[in-house]
Image 1 (cartoon, rainbow, N blue to C red):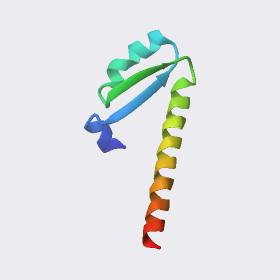
Image 2: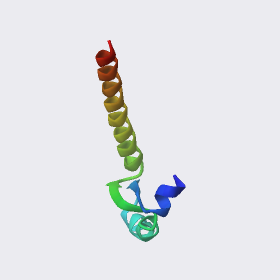
Image 3: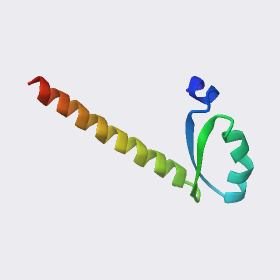
Amino acid sequence: GVGAARSRNLTFMVGGVEQEFNAAKELLTCMGSNVIYCGEVGTGQAAKICNNMLLAISMIGTAEAMNLGIR
């Protein structure tokens, strides 16, 4: 969110033309300390989706372990 951008805690996974990425990188580093070029158009979104899926799987596992512990 806004607070994370102000404190430069965001991570950007960017796809597109590498020259355009390099032109935008300076601006992105004002909001995030991790700015990663992923390749052609769409690869940044694919990386973000994979990251979100991994986080969801981890959270499901944590919830199941908590449920098992409570039982």
